[in-house]
Amino acid sequence: MLSYFIQLMNDMKIRTKLILSFVVVVFVPVSIVSIFLTGELRKFAFNNALEQAYQNVDRVKKRSTEVLNVSDDLSYRLSYDERLKNLANRQYESVYDVFVAYRAYPDLQQAKQMYKEISNIRFYSENQTMLNNWEFIYPEEEIRQAEWYVRAQENIGVIHWDYIVDERDGKHYLSLIKGVDLGSKDNRGVLVINVNTGMLNTILNQESFYTIIADSKNNIVAANRPDLYGRTLSEIHDDSGTVYQPSGSYEAVIDREASKVLIEPLNPEMGQNSLRIISIFSIDSIVAEANRINRLVMTVIIISLVLAVLLIYSFSSLISNRLLRLSKHITKVGTGNLAVAMEIDGKDEIGQLSRQFNSMVGSINELMNEVQESNLQKRRLEQKQSEIKFKMMASQINPHFLFNALEAIRMEAHLKGEREIARIVRLLGKMMRSNLEVGSGKTTIKDEIEMVRCYLDVQKFRYEDRLKYELEVDPDAEPVRIPPLIIQPLVENAVIHGMDHKEDGTFIRVRVTAQRGMILVVTEDNGAGITPERLEMIHSFLNESDEHEGGRIGLRNVHVRLQLTYGPESGLAIYSEPGEGTRIEFSIPTGGEIDD
Image (cartoon, rainbow, N blue to C red; front, top):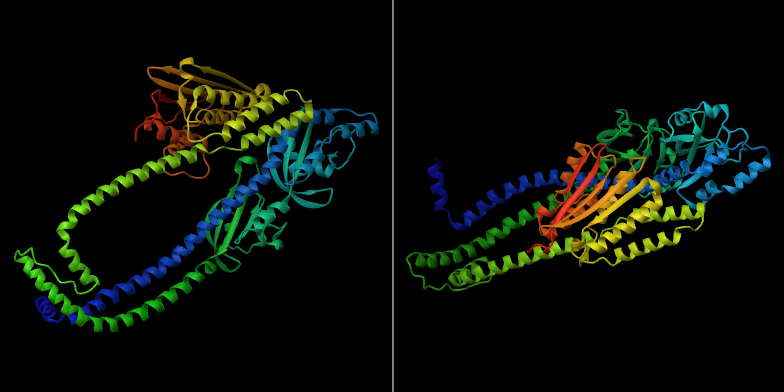
């Protein structure tokens, strides 16, 4: 049977074979591919929308965190403000004394005017000699028994986020609540900072998907639907309870529609009673456009196939005749007659095939030259890409340090006068000028260490006696030229992660030694250290081929730049144990960069 079918196919004319082949080879695969593409297009639309939703949630998270960080930073400064503690501890003998004391401490009112991210501030103190001016408040019995007030009294220094009523206007606000130690166990205050939820609502209103921010008690503190302001998650029709999950990606029926639900914690390290972002979007609305495109594609495919059948029948005879002539020439070549020349009778594929056959031998050498040139261009392109990547990474700078330093200068000037301000401003100006002048060139280790010294002096001004440092530089290493901003990010990392997790102060040491043709750079701190699991994650992040948002971008920047400049063996080495501090070191040759 098979042999009969093969013989039948062999006996067919080429025109009949073309038509039959088109039906078998085109119609069937196109039908299968059409079905497959329909599903894939729907899946692609869904995944694309899901990716967009993740990006939207991440954008909301970053912008909302910026708003909440203002309250967090302000609470940190106020909780350590000795003037505030003295004001709350003092026993006043007259109303006039209270009035004078309040007038001498306008910081709460100024902070409310300065930061649009907060709507109000109040400080509860159980000092009965103080007056209630809606900024300093003596708590009534109802306030004392409130859960948030009791929790703040019992957990001094711990930040809580809660959705509570401000007794001054009777409205609910998302508030930062923090207990403040005023000197003894029985003498404690409570600081409450109301977040400007209008700014949070404005951020959410820019999102196309249904997006809300809820607290751990399932209160909706912000949303891009006005009807949900101040309500709870029970107002959302979700029988599966998906919206109550702490985090993750889920599919659920929301308001009687099949929906995708994304839940992302909002800065869980900012305090207890953490907030979370909930983004909900309808699956039908996502795939509606994909379904319309599928119908259009199927219509076009069917029409095209019908027209193709008609055209293939018309052109098959013309093609078969030309193929017969081509077959005769191929037969001649098969007999060993390599001098035969084919007549070029068209510019289509058959004509092109004839032309390529005539020039095949002569084109081999040209093809080899083209391959060599292509490889050379590829190497040049890779070299340029490495240079561009180096320049891009060298231009990165974290502005958060400058903001904190300038803010510290402002507060110091306000509280103590103008001492040391000129020196710190000079150091900041020197650092900013150095950063702005950074290019793709080199700097000396001496200049890099000078920039590190400026940075540490500014940070010491900010943290005072909590920060101590030591710089040890081998004189033989000072003239060695290195890429800019190599040592300073390591010191900045030590300050940030050392100071944030250790209240009794941090000591940082930077050592640069030269021996046996190598420069060894070591930065050490006595901070809280890093757990083995976290250290393994950092090593994995440093050696990833692609960059990601978040993570220790400064460390990876230095690690990759060192490898691009001096080779893979010159990257960062990180050693740390919990409670013992962290040491980061690298070594580079004094001879210069690696050769490409």
